Amino acid sequence: MISALAGLVENFEFALVVIDAGGVITFVNKAAEQMFGYERAEMVGQTLDLIIPPRLRGAHHAGVMRVGSGSPSRLSGKTVEVAALRRDGSEFPIELSLSVWQGPEGVSMGGMIRDISDRRQRDMRLHRLAHQDPLTGLPNRIQFETRLGEALEAGEELSVLLLDLDRFKKINHTLGHNTGDSLLQALAVRLPAVLDGGATVARLGSDDFGVLIGGGRDVAAEAAEALLRSFDQPFGIGDHLIRLGVSIGVAVGPEDGADAEELMASADLALLRARKRGGRHCMFEPAMRSAIAERRALQDELLQAIEAGQFVLHYQPQVCLGTGALLGAEALLRWHHPTRGLIAPGEFLEVLETHFGALTAGNWILDEACRQLAEWRAKGLEPGRMAVNLFAVQINTGKLAETVKATLARHGLPAEALELEVTETIALDHEERTVAPFRELAEAGVRLAFDDFGTGHAALSTLKRFPLTTLKIDRSFVQDLLTDPQDAAIVRAVLGMARDMNLSVVAEGIETRDQEAALSEMGCRIGQGYLYSKPLPADKFTRFLKKPAGPKKTN
View 1 (cartoon, rainbow, N blue to C red):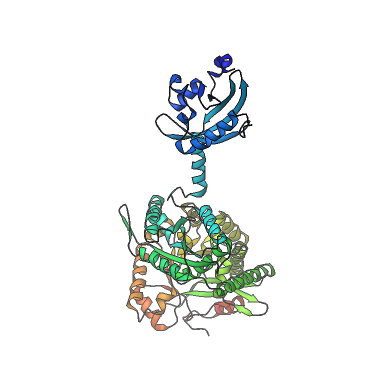
View 2: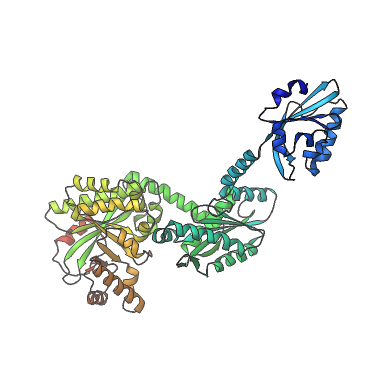
């Protein structure tokens, strides 16, 4: 049959190899010659072993003998993937379709063969993309959680360590993303080097790494300490010597989680505790779940508070240190809880900032502060500028400038009457594109302050990017100003920098005349704190506005 169709099959795209009942090659086409690297004469008359890897020859012999003896082929009509052998000894994957027929000389078998090396490589690339982090070459989250799940199903005792790099975004913003990428690649080399060879290190997210290691709490604690010590040495990236901190959360399976999802959640809770403690490592404890339950309950209550209008604003004056004259007021959020009474922001603000209702709450604060300022002005009272704190979500929406301008217009206020406050942390966590609305607002006359300056590790480049008008010195530096030379030096440095950059400075947390005098002597002109007044509800602040100017303490 082949001789009759030789002209047709000679130009097939696929290779064709025909053998007799004894496994001897009787025909090959040009594509087969090119695929296997032999001339036709070198193949015809040879056994099939010529193109079969040695380890597979036994199975092929058995199959050929079975079909040659008249038994039906198990592969006839099917397409299978197997390995083949080239003349140079290299193996490669092929796709084989087998046909069997009875000819004048007995049983013949023909294989239609396609080289699938490219497809295999493509599949391998896709597999790597799906299971490997392309930047570091480490396993990604999918592969990490798959290995974790398989180990738990096998009943192994193991530990999960989740690592979060401290201030990595700052490095990206100040030194550039190329430097940040190089740092991540350096970590991908350093972290596995300090661990047992059986550990799995994976990159789970932007600056999040995971470690999977066999063993219980003692092994996990030892691994965590080794990882922490690896951060003692700075990273040399180009011309930069970078010191990096890390927080580590640890959970042990199966006691802290019977499946991958639960164990990862437990390690996440431990990581959250480690972050709050300022780094180092923290082991999971069951009580952490209670804390999360309390947080979720608080989230539910906050939703009710937003819907029921339970939030109120109190106002704290900002005064001239030299004369006591009122220069402005800061709007501060309070929660008028239906059963617990007035709740200070320290008990709920951290949760509210990440709550899905944060945008509604933040825009309400802005609107209410502007409304109250307009009301005071309509009564002939002048509190000066109104300072309003922003939530990160208000910046993320991309509509900050539009919202602020609309609010000012709604209440008939000039842009100069408003000062927006952002923390250094919020500023550091935002890309260059988010600076645009602040620049637009600055051009309109709205002022911008960095709140709690000195606690968020803002780089000078951050100060340059934002159109700042004011720095607020955190109360922690003012509190020990008179007894701690380092705090005094920090305050002095901030004041000098602000003077050179033509920025105003507000010192927060002033409680005594001695603090006021020291700040004034250093060149600070504006203060805020209990020496002048605690935060007051609107009606009491109205009475404060009607009093003669002067640095008088209010109880």
